Length: 488
Image (cartoon, rainbow, N blue to C red):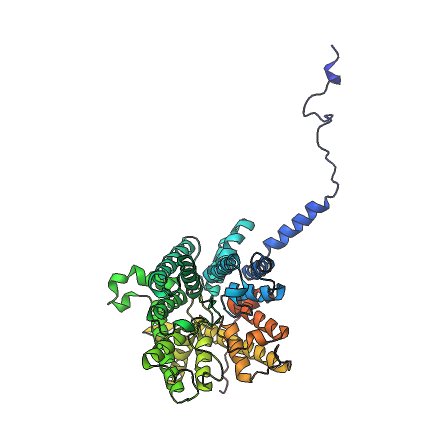
């Protein structure tokens, strides 16, 4: 036998299978490391915007495929439709019932669910997988970001949101299938119509399978009531729904509900009643209005339905145009659209609580009070400043959208020119993710439709969250400055 010194021992330095210890650069490894470092440095708003853009890109490519849409739907039409669905707006340049196949309609409903029930929540869960070692500050940052977007809570709360949505949509589908859409003879088509419209209504999207929206059911009280219940249920938010359900046996004890629940419910009821009464009043004095040809019972259904739908839902049971609705009526609808739904809901707008905070601040100012009080509760200055910031930023952005459309002197695809009121109405409808259209969207050129797409995306993400994604968040300053009064 030879000497053991010359024999190879597994794991020894002279092992021919031992990996090399040389430090030669690996470009793929370095690229992955750089990607990981940049990904870990992304803030929640930045990650949200990127995820939203990624979902839009994938959805656009899928929607343009022949299995999902007809030949008349190209990449541009698919892009507009997907953005409108992800932002649960409802503005459309295609006929959903004719231009999209059944798989395309299913894809559209899935996109609506993704955007309505929480693109931000899904993003947060994805971020939890891709970013390890998140600290408490980062987790709180994610929670605040979700509140910004309006889905509220994480983990078990999001699971409860899905269960609540499934129950509400399921019950609405059952009622529409058995009673509401009985004029649809084929059971399979009736079931899909009921399910699709309940998904669209609960998520405040406004997409319909028929080109005239729900005008064929303006005299059907069951359809009107179910769609309105769907819209309100999705618009008030999970916090309010959960609070009402948990304290359902204490309804008479109004004080048992949180201030947020009481404020949202009161504002929602007040806006619905004021909007319906206002539409009934403005259209009563307009002979050319589309409501004057209806019976009083039909008018009552229409004004209540449009008052509910105007706050970010997008369905209509009467034609919406400057010829069918008076300018005063359109102005009232624009106001309702701008206010929108409630925090934690599936709708857009500046939110009912923001509007209520501004009203309370105005009332306190007129009374000469230094503290804003709502229902015997003092509201912090931070909340009031936030309400002012959201309202002013949203108003300026809508005016900027309208300014761009006005400066664009190009006419529509058929040579038709639009008034400033029509363009402003469409801009508010896009930014507030409403989806009501006065016949402008499909007639705009691509530049005008691009403005609407940007407005829909910014309106759904939230203008403050988008600014935070662009400029980043700044730490709270510990410097105290000297106070000085201004003349107002």
